[in-house]
Length: 230
Ligand SMILES: Nc1ccn([C@@H]2O[C@H](COP(=O)(O)OP(=O)(O)OP(=O)(O)O)[C@@H](O)[C@H]2O)c(=O)n1
Ligand SMILES: C[C@](O)(CO)[C@H](O)COP(=O)(O)O
Image (cartoon, rainbow, N blue to C red):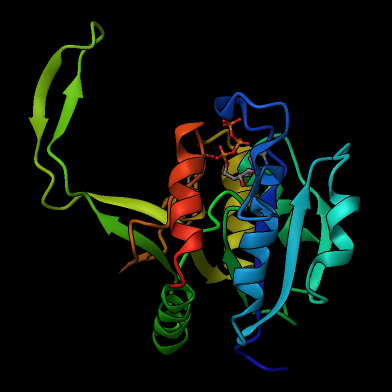
């Protein structure tokens, strides 16, 4: 068994409520392809990624149309009610021993730089510990009160935006997600499950252009970044 085998898990089973569009945002076309295709093709460029599992919703009516155009190393599975459930579903269709490392990347982040993904992978394999792409907060941060008035200004010197990919030992991540989801914890990224289990999480600086397409105004920004050859 190659101890550095890496599987990418792409949670793509969301409905995209905040995008307010008829089509789930991962299937919106920008620069001639769906967001999902851009994201999966970016991951497929990374030679060290051996398999890509895309978790789609149970009744996804769009995936069958684009599946033939997806890279050969892509396999599909059924996602779950929340993002963390979809990630766990991806992990559960794996032989953990065959893929000791899992790299989780949002379908909604098509602008990620391939070099940032490679930087993350190299750090994790070299240190044998989990890490995530992240970007230092660059704005002044305000804490709001219930009336949306400033409660206080927060010290931002140690604050980071958590991005994806997030890469961890597959077995540890599977166990952490299973446990903390069962305990009813709020798990919005893989790192939070690993933190709850006491595992170290390193922050690897990545480009802020790696936006998560979430609201309508994000599409124009994503198109600009995707159209630039990075
Ligand atoms: N049950 C879910 C919910 C989300 N996701 C995926 O997780 C990623 C990040 O989640 P988010 O941006 O919150 O996507 P949505 O949940 O679709 O957005 P919204 O919260 O606006 O509905 C997206 O690629 C989304 O498809 C998923 O696989 N399964
Ligand atoms: C995983 C993530 O993209 C890291 O910032 C983020 O937590 C996803 O949050 P969402 O509310 O599911 O979009």
